[in-house]
Image 1 (cartoon, rainbow, N blue to C red):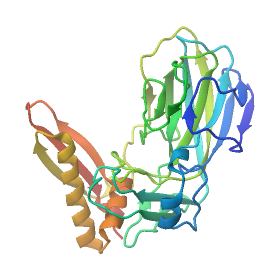
Image 2: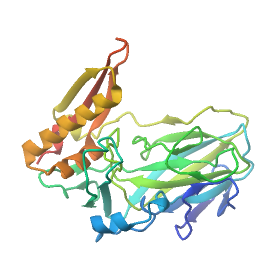
Image 3: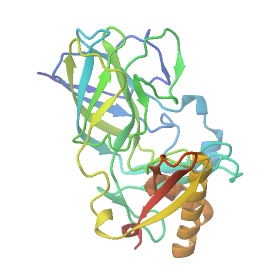
Image 4: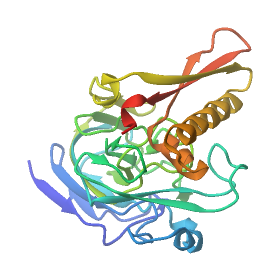
Length: 309
């Protein structure tokens, strides 16, 4: 088995099965992938909201790859052990008018720059947030010909934003094209379930993966085995605040949960509404509590008390 390194000197902002592989590996090899932040290197730790407003949004999600897995073909699967993440000590989160869950409630671009320690950030006044790094995007090339934007995920993986793709997890992906064309990017240092403001804690990172090819093992969609702790251990040592909403429109219920969480953060530690909204994107977990009482759904948002200094 061999160890490989793939730098971020070339990135792609689309899925396209015609891209030539930048690296070829054998089943069982390990590869460390260097990735830009979600802006594909347009932002830095010194950037401002004006910089983000002027940035080329068509470059969002710079992907590093494709990586060819020798012998992979349609009907096979990749077993990907996520070994380690390494961030570069900074990240960003934004609000963009017209996007995100509360898409009509903010009329100016907002940019939060986070200074990252090894396992936490104290960049938001009154709060200490834990880091749980993961790739927002891990995927293989799609079966269809042509270029496809990176925003929608699918059976190929892609922009899943599943925050449990942490180190220690194992991701299984179906293969659709010869060589698979594995790509990764859009790393988050932390994210709440919902990613409500439009971003997680977007950060340039390296990820180390061990990739195994499993022949003749069809898989309809991604499958993940993740460590048992789905919430930061420090967070569950204290109470969790749960904001509960029931009604017939799940998306509106999510909006109401987030609005209530924003108000709570504003009142408790004096955050601006923008700061509270991006904090929700980083740490608030939205869950479906029940679907059985048709047509009523219940949505709950969980906010850990341990974040408050």
